[in-house]
Image (cartoon, rainbow, N blue to C red; front, top):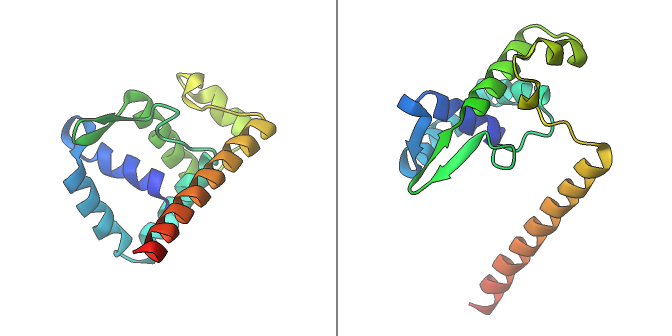
Amino acid sequence: MNFQVTVLKILVSYPDGLAVMADLKRDMAILATSGRDWTDRTKRLAAQVPDLDIFSQKLVERLTGGWRITGKGREVLEFMEARSRRPEPLTEALSQLAAPSVLVLRLPEQTASRRNERRQRRRIARERVAGGIQQG
């Protein structure tokens, strides 16, 4: 299951696109256990925007107690859903978008750098957790 696509899909289903964390977690748990169809669907959608980052691209905003999908988030989700239904060249799809800034295209070295930063943060977090378990 692709976490970021799932968050977008959940938030868009709520009034005003706002969900409190408890509801968001509950809905994620339901979808995570709903079977292979959901996992396959989110993978197909995520493949349409490979460098999807819902927070840095400002597709979702964090509020006290919850998250809300932004207008830009709705546009990106619509783009992903349209692309997954009818494959076409990326340049053609981008030219059809009302707001081309919806999609943030990064140079390969920027993408690799961000990926490496995320991997390093995850490794550090795992080491902290493992260190806490060994000491406890």
